[in-house]
View 1 (cartoon, rainbow, N blue to C red):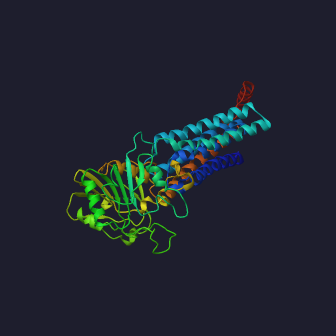
View 2 (view 1 turned 180 degrees about the vertical axis):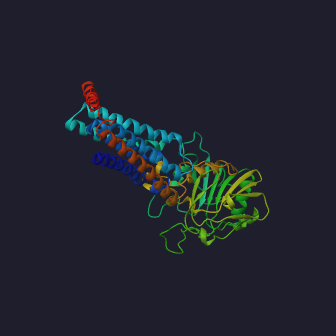
View 3 (view 1 turned 90 degrees about the vertical axis):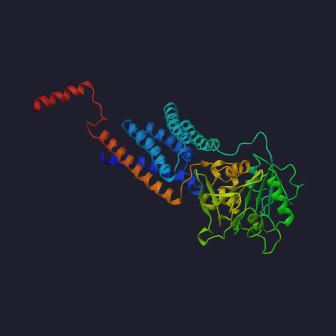
Amino acid sequence: MIRSAALGGLLIGFLLAGTLLAGLSFGGGLVNGQADPAAWTGIAGAAMVLLGWLCVTVRPRWRVPLLLCAGLGTFVAILTLCGVAADVVPGARLLWLAGGMVVAPVLAILCARSLSGAGRAVVLVLLAVLALLAGRLPDGMGRGERPAAVRPALGVVTALPLFWREGRREHAPILAALDSAFSVRAVDRIAADSLSGVDHLLIAQPRPLAPAELVALDAWVRGGGKAVILADPLLLWPTGLPPGDRRSPPSTSLLDPLLVHWGLFLAPVQPQDIQPARRFLDGGALLPVAGVSRFTRRGGPCRLGEDGLVALCGIGKGAVRLVADADLLDDRLWLADPARSTALSARAGDTPGLLVRWLADPLDAAPVAPGAPWARSMLAIALGLRAALLVGMAWVILGAVMIGRRERPGGTGKRMGKAGKEDAEGRTQSEH
């Protein structure tokens, strides 16, 4: 009995802890910072296929404890980890995980009962592979930038390597994301003719602008233009270009004359803000930044938000949003897996969606909901994992106790026929 209980508990613990840790490692939680239950769908589905096979091959009295404690216990452990690590766990993505964990063992049990030998093994392996592939499907559930029916013209003024990549002829991933909502084009010189037909403008750490260009930009905004300006007093964007190369972007913002004209001052970066950081905005959206600064007001039409990180300015008929960081465009901050730049599970921040929203309406100050169930920090993930393992341990103990009771003579797992019952009753009466 004790040996059976220990073996059953070991099986449940292996399935539960293995699924939990494998999903956290290969599902992306440790890389992209997401505490997304749907990221466990593939790993958990494959584990449930194994569980279904075990339920057919082990003793019948073990089946209920295995299905209950390994199946439901794994689901509860994953939910615990995500709930502790993140502020919000999307219900739709939780249902996706639950559906996969129910369908997989049922199909495995049906196949294992109807097949035998090599045929059974092949089908079960195929089911596990299908479960792993199904884990990729949640990438398209409710997030991401969908192509707009009408794409207004977006001009981009920048010295950052967005339209060219060092050593590569390709655009930066952020431009591909913006291209879903706008018709993106580079603007090399700011003037009335070059801004003709441009509906929105993104200015990110530009080269030194001539006084005539600053005047033209101010006039364009006052005439009804919409702009997002990223001004960084300490650019940390890594570059392989030699010092002094004219292609290198300015290490500090050169827009002070324009900022002063609009009543703003860009403060120097504080030592504690130099390192890359995950900045959670009002509403929960995640903006990865590096060397972030803040604005202060010196009069003028602007108002500050996000503790000075942004300034919202109504200039004439136009609107401008200024952000005190330009490194946020660097895909090394917001993209966890460059090989899958369009996959939502490869995101490590809400940067593309935030930029699209800001460019559409620079003065929009409404809180922005997170595009994914972001973990608050790596410490939160560690605390969530600890809580999940403690919950899992409780399910392991419960499973071991259930199996032990069913293996005990006269336990719930042993059924006596009518003759056995009569014989037992006869022995009891003779003893009295």
